[in-house]
Length: 457
Picture 1 (cartoon, rainbow, N blue to C red):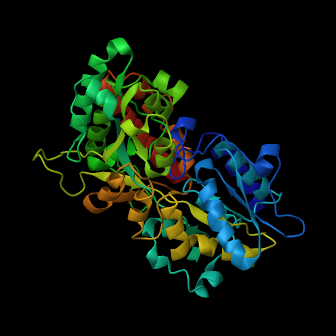
Picture 2 (cartoon, rainbow, N blue to C red):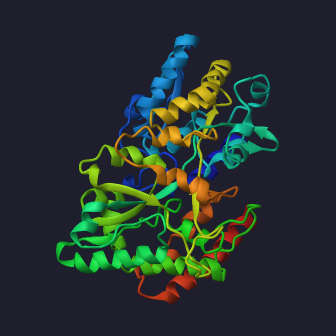
Picture 3 (cartoon, helix red, strand yellow):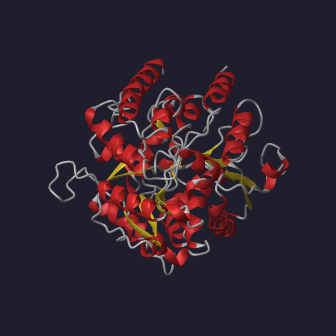
C-alpha cells in the first residue's frame, strides 16, 4: 500500500519541475536540474539496477558537472573495497520519473541523491534504508560535523535516512566587460539591492540599442533568486517550525517589491523562459545574475570567463543606516543527501560507499576537486581554491559575514512551491512588474496557498 500511495503522490507533485538548488543548472530551467547529458541506463530509457551478479554498485545523480569528480572519489573507494561503482547521470525530470518507477515496484539504484523537495515522501514510505545502525558503528561519521539543516532534512521519526553530501551559498555574478562598456561602477561587497537596481537600470538604459540588459532573474529559481529578498527584508517563506509562512507580511512584501523594481529593468520573463539566465549571461546580453556555488564550474569553463566576477550577495538596508546589520544579508542554502534504496541487494557495500563520500576524507576530495562545496563544516575554502584565476571568496564571505538559512520546505514542498509561481499568484507580477499592486496581491495569495497546503499535509 505504501508503494502505491507513494506512486500516486509523486505523480501529483512531480508534474511540475522541482526547482531547488544544489547541483542544478538554471540554464536547463531548474536550480536542482542537472546537465542534459545522460549516460548508462538512463540513456537507454530503462530503469537502473545493480548488475545481476552484484559486481557493480549503481549510483544515480542528475548533474553531469559533478560526474568526473565523484567518479574519481568512487574509484578511490573501489581500490580498497574491490567493488566497482557505475555512476549514471540522468536529466532532472527523468531522474525522478525513474526513481518513482523503482519505488513503485521496480528496481531502484543502490545509491542515489535525495533532495529537500522529495525526502519526506521517500522516508515516510520506507523507500530509503534506515542508516542508524550503520552510523552507530561508523567511526568516520559524526553527524555533528555537518550543517544542521542538511542532517535534519534527511531525518524522520528519529531515524537517519541519508548522509549529507554538500551545501551551497549564493553570490552575485557580473560581467566586468559590460560594466566597463557602459561606464557603470562594478559591484562591491557593500552593495545593497537598491544598488543592484540602480546599476541594472543604468546598463539597460545605456545598452538599449545593443539589446543589453542590466539584470536577469529566472523567477522559477527560488533558492538563488527571490527567496533571498524575502529573508533579507525580514520575512519567511516557511517558518522555522515548517508549519507556517509570513510571505504575506509587510516585511516579505518589501522584499518582493524590490524584486519587482529590479524586474522592471531586467530581461523580460518571456526571454528568460526561452533562453535561461545562464545562457543570456554567457551570450553577453546581461550584466548581472545571481547564482549558486553548484554552478561555478559552468562559468569557469565558459568562453569569456575572464570577464566573469563574483561579489557577495547584496543586502537589504532595512533600517537605512548605510551598513549591513544582522539578518539583512541572507543566503539560502540547500544540501543533497546520499541515500540507499531500502531494497538494495548490497546494503553493506552501499553504506560503505556513501560513508566514504561523506567522510572527512571524501568531503575534502569533493571540495578540492571543485565538485561542490562540502556538507562537512570548515571545508569551504578548499572548494573556492579549486578554480585558479577566479575569485570565489564571495561564496565563503557570506558564511562569515551573512546569515545562512536552510531552503524552505514542508512535508509536501512541491504542492505549494509550484502553485505560488502560477497565474493568480506571482506569475502575474513577474510578467507585469510595472504594477506594484500585482506583487502585493501575489504575496497575499501566496500566504493563503501555503497555509492551505500545510493544513492539508
